[in-house]
View 1 (spheres, rainbow, N blue to C red):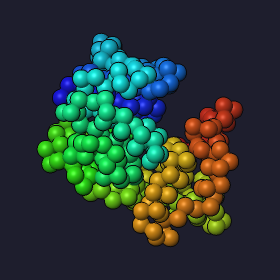
View 2 (tube, rainbow, N blue to C red; view 1 turned 30 degrees about the horizontal axis):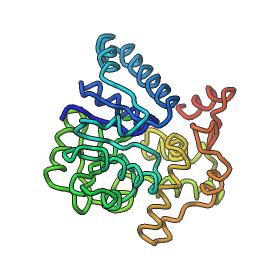
View 3 (cartoon, one colour; view 1 turned 90 degrees about the vertical axis):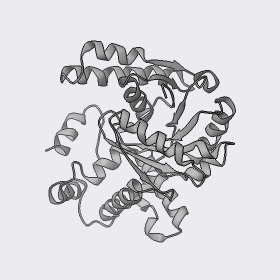
View 4 (cartoon, one colour; view 1 turned 180 degrees about the horizontal axis):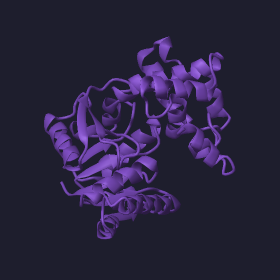
Length: 295
């Protein structure tokens, strides 16, 4: 396995492309937006610069990594002769099903199709293709070049040989793969998102303020960042989407999204990506906000 296609040049997609390219895989980074591809490559270059500054890699390593990535705006062109596709588009079921139908149509029969979904059923995604035995979940953590975990999720029909191949591949890019079963939210988000949702409920009920809640969890539970800060980092829209998957999947009221979360997303307060969430990330407040969060 040498040639990898990555669908989506956003935060997760460019991180996945960066990681594979750094380990000398030929990467095709695909996005319908040329602007997104330009921004994605700029992010990869900037992250590599940080690694050079920290002496983790050399300038030559950076140039080789960038040279290993080619960009495409059409799936049909980007998936030619690849061994694996990793889809990292928005966490939207209809969009993912549409992408996988197109991938199935345009990829070689041997190609394994992976999704970076953090909560959506692998079995459901696989059912949109004619190769359900070759569809699997590879849930990378953000930021991808740094975080070691990859949650590997087999669908109902995923072949054991495909699972073994993806586990071995994850190890080759210095990740720690953990195989889990195909249930809503898998392991990571089934545990994490209800905790974040409960932190939002705690704020909504007036138990404590934003910084107080995050400080309790950081200092009392040794979390590297508080749950509200983490929600901003993930994106409140993504948090809401995952809570909806959990709620619809389990039909249990404990997974119902907090009304405050719903309202913030409707108001466009999505966290870092929109400049405001539980914290203010506008240019005139950014330095102050970051200083408070990491104090």
